Image: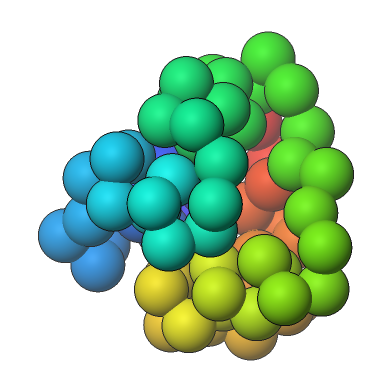
Length: 66
């Protein structure tokens, strides 16, 4: 599962993820299309884990499984 699929599985829009994590919507889209790799603070990682309802290993795999 990639990072886009994690988001869609939870029924979230890119704008919602961006708002909660504190980044631009275009940043989230760039992650999802493999244009950039997320550079996040620990608090932002925790927010993504909560949003996507997954553990760190799943998130890590999703990010690097473009």
